[in-house]
Length: 123
Image 1: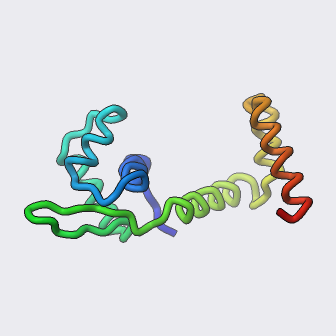
Image 2 (image 1 turned 135 degrees about the vertical axis):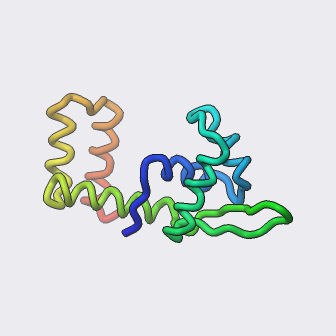
């Protein structure tokens, strides 16, 4: 399983939305959320390259970056890890935790009911 830090995941989010991108384009895309300098973003890009989560292609004097790790695969890894570590691999205690803390809104409850119906009917 690839371990990606919170900062690295912000860079990945940008690349999952649009790629390939140059480092300065990643900086621009992150500028509303983070006040990172280009050097910081390049460090994060290099870490992701070393983890083989992204690839870089030379484009003139710059590099263009694109994800190798797919967002759905990353979400699956992270969500499975969370459920395994905190809830012994079971989803019901996870949902119970959020419902006990009253963080489930009406829309969340409706979505969960629909998911359960879909599972019961094999969809």
